[in-house]
Image (cartoon, rainbow, N blue to C red; front, side, top):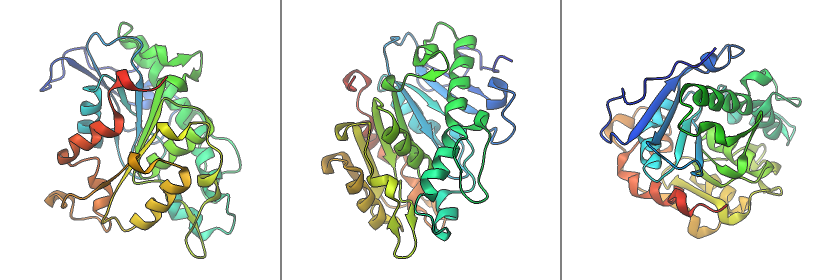
Length: 292
């Protein structure tokens, strides 16, 4: 089944140079049965086939639509951007702190990535709903629906070309981005407020965070808000990941009024508040400057 794409140029946008597509994951692959919020893909018209792709993974319970503003800003930096829906409930930190196995969060994230491994208690997803399978089917659907836009260039058969892809996300999604970048060499990593996977007692960070990384330190970028409830763990995690201090931004804007209902409201404000546009641009950089 070909994904249902918005007709090119039909989306009302402030910047008419950008083209936006939205489609359900199940339209790209009928094997997807849950977590079917629409993917959001945005790119500049006539963009070079060599431009890198930013894949953004939302936090627990989040939807790609929620970060449309950020995706638009990043597309303006010369990237193709894809907000990818995935199985994001429950959160790692809702499961693994209660489990004695220190590898719980790594097993959890491997399951979410490709459906393999032992997973974690009460958490499983089929391979077709793993992040990799969803990414592959989304790019194939985009390539079928808009063959002149270059989306298929990020695939080698059924394998993502990670060397051309920037992995990014918020909260649980940023933890997934970090897990991917540990496993394969990606073009760049941009983390919003994660990972902070920990085990009890003492809130010790999970072993995988300090493990070897396929992606070198100079390609890692991250942020957190100084008033997040887990700011201390995030600062520690970024040090353990080996992210250069100059590439970690500490956000500090006051909370927008509409974000006041969460028990940890500053946690999600960093990807929604347009007051951070300048910082977003720094974190992603211009696509032309992304390392190869």
